[in-house]
Image 1 (cartoon, rainbow, N blue to C red):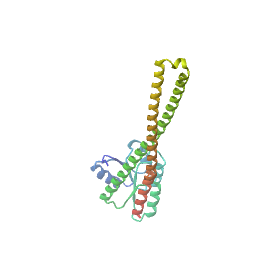
Image 2: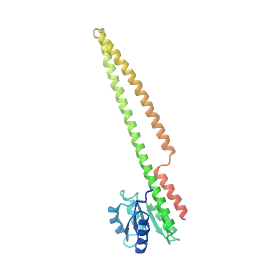
Image 3: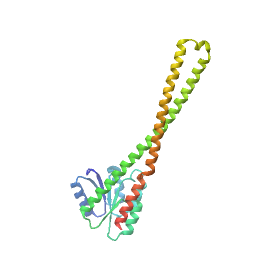
Image 4: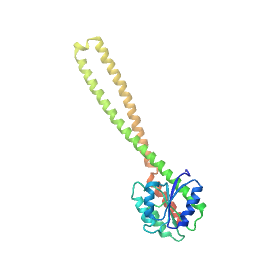
Length: 239
């Protein structure tokens, strides 16, 4: 995790905003502030934070309303959110997790805990990003393998046509009796036999690779499942 990450603090309480501004900037984070959800939407367009810290009870637009807007927007839905909460705010915490909030910070704030939760959420988000990249690369590799198999089939078909054409020459005794031409035909068949063996070997390797990928996908924890399990674990800890 890189402490140069950008954090947007959203809270109608000026004291809270100033507290987080001072403490997080000292630790190397880039920090922006907003007094409510509406102001935060304007800041998001320019600031593009790596993490959002926000209260739920705010004028004009609550934290839950802002969270729903962000999770419905492809540009912002992957930004992790930590929300401030009261000690007895269990129902709201559960509702927040269901909306997509990543974690909660309980008031009154203990900054050591705050920092630990910020780092944990950012690490989790970095992990999700790495898994997403891996899944994308795996998908592209599978697509490339399938395309290669198709091209190999086309190449094999082309060689069939070539050999069919050469076979016609063999049937013409006048043409095939000429030694240079007979040697050329033999050389063509030798080359196509070698090419066929290479195609068959490559095709078998691709099939094996595709089967291995399918086994990996069956047994691995996907990105969405992993994120759900982490949220569930955090939810259980908070209750």
